[in-house]
Image 1 (tube, helix red, strand yellow):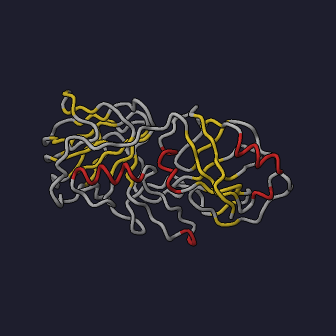
Image 2 (image 1 turned 90 degrees about the vertical axis):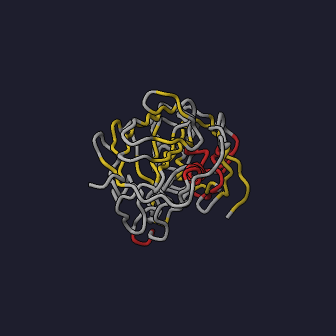
Image 3 (image 1 turned 90 degrees about the horizontal axis):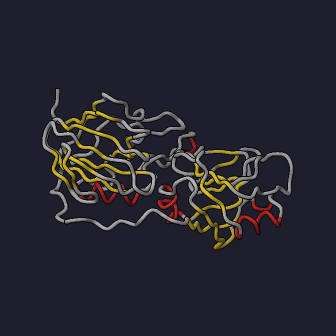
Length: 289
């Protein structure tokens, strides 16, 4: 049994393995997947000396607890949270040495939703279609972590970053999403488009890795019936029958039959990954496709 492994003591509400995902397979019906807050995942990898695409753990709200079988360097980022090694407080957002057999505890997020845990060498589960990411929609990749699971680790590469702490953006108090309208905004009534870009929404508790669901004013349709299924992209804002927008995130379906009123700029999606239920949301139109 290799000593380059990580035992899961407490899996948390939802902890998954994520890397940069598996783009380029939408024609096969395979979502992109990957870390929802990609800049946070890349940063913690850099802090421990991993390449940006190395697999990390993505936690949801209540963290996790891990025990390495050999000494490792870890970094925790994304949603701010307490970190401890064998009960002693450790740094968040900085490289931390964890001895073999010590207990690393990643606590509940103080703000934000998703934390990222990088381990020197990366999480070395078997890749599927070139990625180690867990995809909750298709079921590809490793399953979400469970208590008692053991994750293999790769060999460390370059030395870790020599920093005390790395600055990271705070989770949003208000989420502002820039949207290019179209291609199916004409399926919504003109007043619905105005409502979409002028009224306030809030993040729904029903949100997940597939989509950020909105609570707020329903958008009325100008056309009845349904579209033939067409391709969906990351950031697409779909209007389902209840009229409340859904922003597609990394595990989104590759096709859909509900109209897409607009597409969120990719640069705004990491903040969406950290928006808690109840967070105010504003959609700002910045163009038309």
